[in-house]
Image (tube, rainbow, N blue to C red; front, side):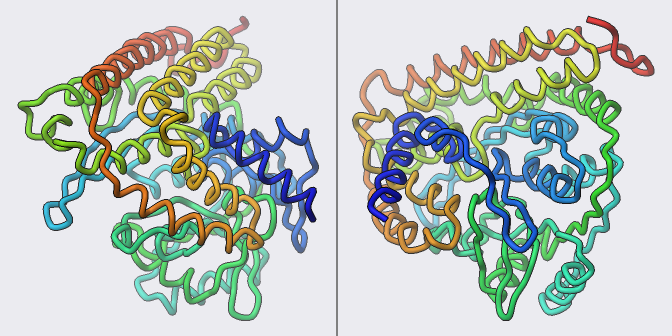
Amino acid sequence: MTGKKQLKARIRARMAKTGESYTTARTHVAGATGPETDHGWTLHGGRHSASAAVAGILRNGGFPVSEPLVYVAGGGIGAGYILWEFKRDDAATLVLGFRNRWQYPLKWMDTTLTRLGVPFDVHLTGGAKGASARLSAELAAGRACVVLPDRFHIGYWHLPAHLDGHGGHPVVVYREDEGGVYVDDRNLAPLRVERERLDAARARVGSYRNMLHAITPAKPDLEEAVLAGLRDCAEHLSGSSDSFSLPAWRKWSRTVVDGSAAKGWPKVFAGGRGLAGAMLSAWEAVEPVGSDGGNHRDLFADGLAEAGDLLGLPLHDLAAEFRRIHGLWHDFAETALPEAENRRVRELLVAIRAAVAEGSSGTADAEAAARELWALKAEAIPPSPGFFPALSERLATIHHAETAAVAALREALPPVGQPGRPV
């Protein structure tokens, strides 16, 4: 038991220092280990919630496909920046999007499964009782289901009440027992959720209330799906929206230092009010240790490399460039929340994420860490004179690099109607 505790501590310490996901940190610390199987369902882990859900169902159905290729088939990376201000709570909430259609989870799932040629049924039941019954019927028929619960109500993230209804990410429900269900949220050990809690979490957000995708695993049409996803990515990120495409990074870079704009950070976070929470949110959103997989540029890079081999396209240099860009995002996150000055809040956030990866056995650890984290997150951090300019400069560098990389992606893809060409 002591050895297991020491191993967990080493894994969590690495996550807090590097921002790596639990799976990556565990591999570095303990080496590769085989996945755990729960009542016939193999828990493979994963990096991004939605792509891991699809890949997990296909792999458990006997159709092995990598998560990076699923991610590319779904349209690859996206970009998005929104700063919401809530005068009632005197708070500002930072929302970042890193996946194609990040603001449309239902559309992303429908598009990805359709491209892959994987059969599925969608249910959007109005009432919680009917939604619960539908889920039980699908599980009884042997179909794992993807649902979209609110993170506050699902419980195991241990969020504070003011985040009630702020949304969540897709998870797989693969079996049920008396009073509970078992979910695959990239955890590596069984994670049980009380049925009433899951039903409430599914019913909380109106735009996707009680959403359920019942998926029938089938051999995916990878070549066409991946090529369509790459074209979608290049087209979408070439758009002009400064909230939902690459210009969002340029907009963010400018507002960080604009003291006169209504949404300028020197004004919104005057005197450091609310800045601690914003910076922790930025670190969590950008780094793979976060609840939804971070900035995804490393995942996309792996997908580009695999797509290049699959389609016979010259994408390996581009994959290397997106790995470099992933490093730029890491540098931004370190600037936003330096490890030396913020070691404890990073450790607490990591403790929660690691506890989820460890399944139901980590519940007590996560609950204790969350109580301390949310108290610390409210503390003000007066910005140093060069803090906002440093953030702005890093964001401008990222915007320039991603704009050039997306232009290179467009050039590398064959014309519509023409399949991949030999490298």
